[in-house]
Image (cartoon, rainbow, N blue to C red; front, side, top):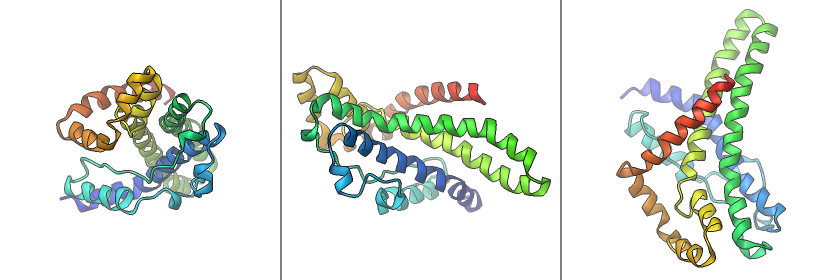
Length: 223
């Protein structure tokens, strides 16, 4: 077990992951608020404070355990879901889909912003900062921005798996005709079990990997 490599990954990835999940969850609440549901705001979840969205086990303990047990090869975790009450929407089916889509869209946007910062900000810093300071600042910052691209793309694509309660499942419910949407939404209580089975059997990777590669290819065009 390469403890040094695992600790390095934790240090580099911690801030990008916190930013990714914070913006992901807050975007759900913000879009829901704009569409008429104030539940997230009343419960203090319409915020960019990471502490409001962190789940002690799902966001901290489980990812660290998986990182150690798999020697850095596999990480999985989750944040506290932002509460949304679709009964407050004028069009619950459609607006729930909009709120769900906000998370992955935000993460893809953060990945693109990270790529732009690598492309535009780092060269500027290299030019402005003195040599020693530039090396000390730019290398860790570039690694963190690359980590931000990776984790935001992964979080976006993983959440697009079309199984409720994941965002992709809720978008799917919004797209289906009414009767099929009701039937499909009934699998939500078993959704996370289904997702875990999809991961364990490798089926999820067949969905996730091609879309991740497509997004990485598009983002690489920026770099």
